[in-house]
Image 1 (cartoon, helix red, strand yellow):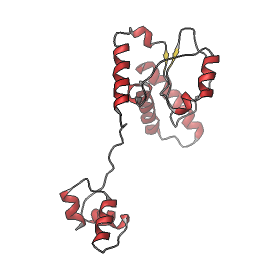
Image 2: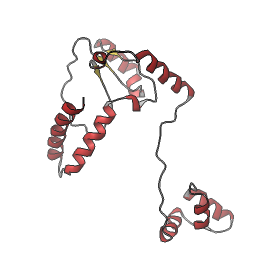
Image 3: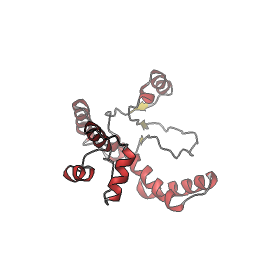
Image 4: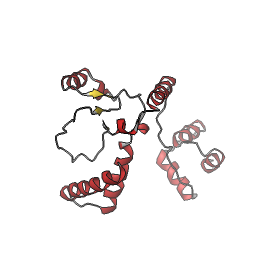
Length: 177
């Protein structure tokens, strides 16, 4: 029954199968289902997580795109793109030049009252950014490329990781930005 159900509907989850079998009077675990499917030559996979955009987010993204459609390339050179990543070895103080703009993704930690107040006191100009739009941020591509390059070198300790990150970041930013 397990194999037949999955072949008929490949989007069936292990939870669905557990429930179906329980209703039929058979108690099994998700692990049992995985093992059964694997023995039949079937493999499981998880659906890719995508950002679910509500209509308000779609409208905000469209508005942002229209407002910045004709911005000259030079304007974007003065934007400091922010994002979080698990590679956090870059602890240098950031010196903001006059005329630079700071971008953040509207994560609650960035929109908290204390953060807004700090940015205001430091006289940071903040780029209006549509919520739920990480794919619009070019730094995301740099992080991905950096992680791939660092992973290829397989650092064995934190010192090697830091050295490789610094070397690859220097190569990455000079080639990609």
